[in-house]
Image (cartoon, rainbow, N blue to C red; front, side, top):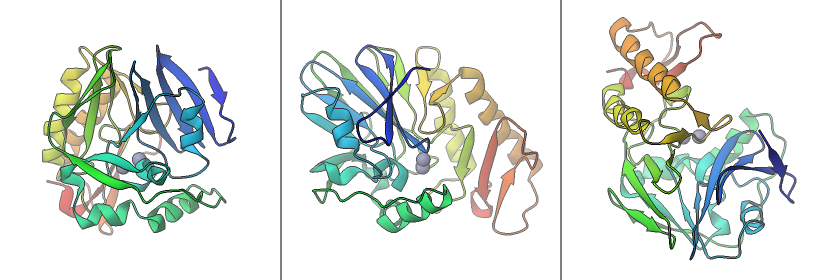
Length: 261
Ligand SMILES: [Zn+2]
Ligand SMILES: [Zn+2]
């Protein structure tokens, strides 16, 4: 992996395809940056630590469109560097506003043991809600979206036919979070996860955390784990559980009682 440190000292940049970059924010979360002929698309914008805007400006002078995979603070926390941002309409409810608040960002940084202040940003970014199958035309490059409700109801996968890459946000992560309010049941998640799995015939997946790159087998692994969890109903001590209990297992699912169905 060839990572180049950005000028803000927080982000690092990896070229994953022509005009396509993974941007890591402090090892916590990934953003993706796709440059077309007329404009560039930033998919997710981190927690708001460091300067994601200046970081992507190092890569292009073109107008930048911000769109997010889902409305959680680690994916839209840097939105106020932009005047507006695109988000799927199903992530409009108030619960997602809470989950993308500054308070949620601070709690997340604390949870990751990062002693840092969130950056001051110039705008109060306005959401632009989009519906199913919305696409972004960057000039010679069209990026399509599909809504796969699960991790959040408005979770979206971005499909870039020019590179055969897809960006899956947090919806099929190796450590899948389904414990938060605003997540769907596991059965609903399965519908979208199977769509993502079938797309791996044509697209290579990059997700929102760790090193980004995810194989078809890894996505199958998390789907199989959900099947096994629905059959073997794990025991809850509190309201949520991490399954399987073996820390060394490849995949884990963090689920709350009311989503285990
Ligand atoms: Zn998330
Ligand atoms: Zn995330």
